[in-house]
Amino acid sequence: MIDVVTLGEAMIRLSPPDFKRLEQADHFHAFVGGGELNVAVALSRLGLGSRWVSKLPENPLGKMIRNKAREQGVDTDYILWEDKGRAGIYFMEYGASPRPSVVLYDRAGSSASQMKKGEFQWEKIFRGARWFHVSGITAALSKSCAELTLEALKMARGCGLITSYDLNYRSKLWSEDTAQKTQEPLMEYVDVLISTEEDTQRVFKIKGGGTKVDKENYRIVAKKLMDRFHFKIVCITLRENMTVWKNNWNALVYDGKRYYTDKQYRIEIVDRIGGGDSFSAGFIYGYLSTDGDIQYAVKFGNALAALAHSIPGDFNLSTKEDVERLLKGEGLRIKR
Image (tube, rainbow, N blue to C red; front, side, top):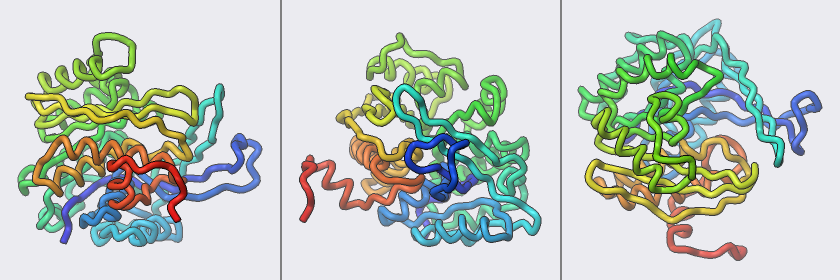
């Protein structure tokens, strides 16, 4: 049984070890990941049925991506395959204060960027599912992908699914003005928006009440988003960067009536890629597993995101038991 469907591109990540710069690298560590696939993987590991929809090249790299999704229990039956396509690649150069980490993309012309409306059998894809998740990265890949994103959101709504959208602004994919013009029409079909204060300001020109990272500022952002777009739920993740590898992490959620918050996690980062995706997955899981308990969904999503930072790679390989132990406040002593 499929509970959640996601749509988007997955890529292969190549990272030089030992904090080397890309120009120093003589070998790379390889991972597979992508915003919506990361969500599907996390949900599958938590025990929900997840399906990832995309387009891949019919070559070893495409099969590698598909296989990594399958290893984690994600349904890949509705992937489209291209004979002459290519897989997107990105390079992750790990920084250390005061040098930030840097991402270099090699994804132009990828098979996923060629996706277009009319290609996918949405009624079959959504049959029996309860939730559809997509992000702004998918809409940014190409004009045809933006049109596909709108089609998928409309079809999901028509099939009775809850829809969620992670704004996920990427300046290397499109400008702020293009992102706003393209995505504002999509918001009509979004039930749950997931974003950050920074992305909200860049895309929708919505600002908080100040520059400090605090919950009061984020309450203002959440309310402005709700007032403009009339979402059912707005989720804002809060990241404070003390150093490259030490962050504070938290989240705030607004349903139009009350604000929901949770404890702040002080995290030691092994790998920060996919932290927001893990919040999305944890919130979806918490909401669906409790018939809509938003407070539990916030706590679960926040904890799952904190755990994601402790695991190398894009995928969050945490389990439900890992999250529950963290929620119970278990310490850091070795588990023997």
